[in-house]
Length: 347
Image 1 (tube, rainbow, N blue to C red):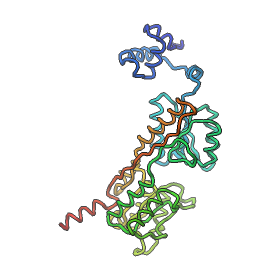
Image 2: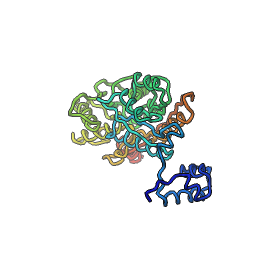
Image 3: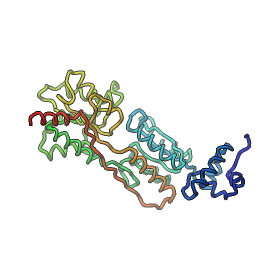
Image 4: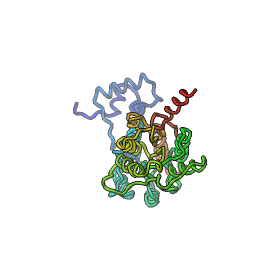
């Protein structure tokens, strides 16, 4: 059928109001399921397509949200983006993605998305003060993943608490000499949680065991970074090495485990390893990776809820802050299971 079918014609055929058709097609619970099903079936049979331009004119919004990401190649961000897209789609909003890399700055991201008429922007990438101020100047609804530098809406995991929790777990597994890969900045929550927990439990902190991000073209991704950082640890004399490693994320940790295995050592018998993010790859690493889980479905759902609430309520809505509590996922890479087995054998 070449003729464009409208909601008004569907309403006339079924002898219901146009408002009822509109609500039913948006799956509103205000309309009885039986009526919703009838309307949807007729709309599908007539090849109905919503008029997005007309909808924009009526509601004064485009029903689209921008999403600024640092990468699609890193599993954590890919999984989070997928969940955000899912929840936007459930609310009949489109997602427009922008990758903010070395050549694409924060102000360019905002201009790109505003030029395409988005109603709000979700920032998953870290944004500096310049970008936040520009977003405020443009009067666009925003929400940030992790707390921004200036007061605004944000959804965040308790990163410091996460780091404390996983570091304490390694200590409970019997480790007093613990290294950290990928960070070396006390202002960063993961590194601060690690160092504070070592101090709390009177454990050794050795500056040689904290290996920051390597500025070298041969280490172009986090797998390679983890591998390279671990090689630096392994270059130390055996008696000078840590017995456990905490990595900035799971990808770093998996790279580190490869370096350990290649050196002829075993995880966790010789060096235990733990990470952050609970990516799917960690369940298939050898051995499976102990990690911190920040529920991505909950984070994505809250990010979408906060941005859409701001869009619906307007500019005067108060800022929202949502903290998602982390969970420790214990697998074989930390040595916990070996410790339990050893204790049983000595009983």
